[in-house]
Image (cartoon, rainbow, N blue to C red; front, side, top):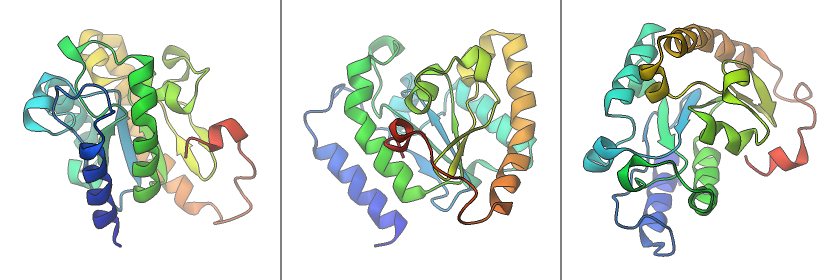
Length: 203
């Protein structure tokens, strides 16, 4: 099966899984280049995303598009998704149990796409990969889990509310092309060594 076929199969299995929470909302699976170098992962869809069944298409999504284009990329060059695939009521934060239920599907999505770099957007997404991480401290830093670089970034929605956050996010985005190039230049084996066993379970 091709990557696209495997993703369609995954999408269909999520749709059929009646045990998943937030069934009253539409499924927002993800979109973009399945052969991307970098994958952006948010926390959950918002109102606009729920309406259009596409990730990051509201105000925060427009900022994300600007940031991506600002470093010479296009939205269709990357892959964008969320941990939780359906909108929580009133755009509230996803609950821990909701994140837990959707985690296995995100893990499979990552496995299929196999990006070199993963950019979690916001603290909920960051804590999936880095449970003890703090977005205010770790935003823009590069971490390694297995053969991937993890680069936590402020969520664009938070950046819209804070000029200083937006400035920091813009600076971090400018580093992403170099981070991708660095990953590409690494040996295929022997460089990364052994990751934390608990973190290895996430990828």
